Amino acid sequence: MSQIFAYSAIGTTKKLKYDMDVDKDNTYISFKIIAEDKNNCILCESNEVNVLYSEIENFWIGVLYGYHGTTLTFRTKGVYDLYKVYNNGSLVAETEDPIIELPYKLKNNELKWILVECYSNDANNWYVLRWISTKFSKIPSRDKSKYKISVVIPVYNAKIFLPRTLDSILSSSMSDIEVILVDDGSKDDSLNICKWYAKNFPCVSVISQANQRVAVARNTWIEAAKWEYIWFVDNDDVVHPLMYENLYNACKITKTDIAIATTIIRDDIRDKKPCLTLPGINDRIIVYSYDDVINNMHAKDNMYFVAIWNKIIKADIVKQVHFPTDYPNKIVLYEDSAYTPTIYSYIDKFAFSKDAYYIWDKRKQKTIGTASTMHKNENTDNVWKAFIYAYSYPMYNRNEKHWELSDYASFKRLVESYDKFDEKSSLYWYWNAKMIELIKNNKLENNKYIMQDQHLCDVVNELLSMV
View 1 (cartoon, rainbow, N blue to C red):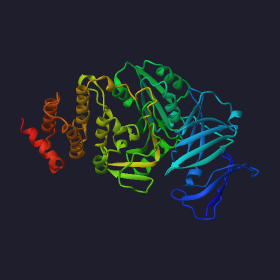
View 2: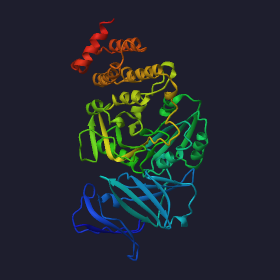
View 3: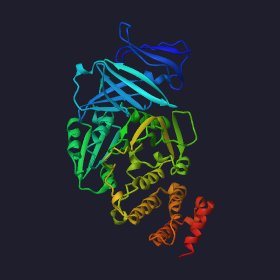
View 4: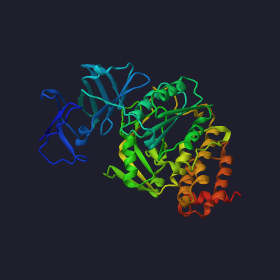
């Protein structure tokens, strides 16, 4: 039988009534949500749904006056497929992400009776949860003396999406955050947007440099970051309001130096499937060993392991490794694939939080790239040379304590691409020379992981026979 929950309007005293024991964190229950006012008059109710108890207990609406107007963020347990926002009974906006920018500034009296509908497509059966609010939480002021996380954002020609990204970060439930914007020679209005946020939000600072690509932009502020953790965010994605808090807590609970967020891919096919394919574990926070991570890093659906943008990392580790910049022909590509495995070699265990969400925006309607790369403007040979440099980078910069497994993972990924070339390729002999250089410099013939892999062993022996 369904459990009926009496649920008063957000911002007033909540009353959750049920007649059974509930595991608030893990139990799915079939129920209706009823929103009541103080006089017990029903304001609205949901259809019957099956969701976690904690989804209704933790709902919260944040209001931030951003660059475009009023930004509303929705703090829910998970990420829904669609959010609809009503003001005084009229639909004013809808979005696929837990953030909506209204292109005007709402006054306090206009914020009354906001209704938010959250839709989820579970096995093609749409259901809706409705929340109504007569009170809103303003974004807290941020005390510089208490910062715990430095959020570093390289910015390049991002005027369309940058305000949304910044508003989602500034709406975080965790107030102990500073935001560092590095404008990498933008040719649009991005720098002015950066300056606007720095003027209006004390936790935001900005620096401008001539265009030197994303790797240099990130390196610019690695040394400047002062606080306990560093996070590299792309200038056109969205973070969930609870993400920073959940990742920080995951690090503290598990005593790890890194925490990884679930990555939600947003493309033109409405699909919020998280990137997570390691063996299923029901715990909300999972601890992986270095072996777990490095052996699954390049799996098809595990790009969240390679990407740099969905992690908080201890600052004293980040400062030991810089993003690669000495690319052939100065073509800066695959910098995450170079940097992340290198950082991993300094870490023994990793925390993964299922309740922290980073939203990677890949929709075709986007008109900008995440960073100032030259990927589409360069010929294939130059792109492949950049690939070789990036995937070789960890083998020359990794921590010695994980040298064998680190070199094995990098070499295996290189060989997967090396196998695609034949003698007719213009890059064939360039590849051979670079691979022989790697083998000799890193003594790969003595690497037990490589020599136990028959194919990799054959590649090593074949290349050494050419010397």
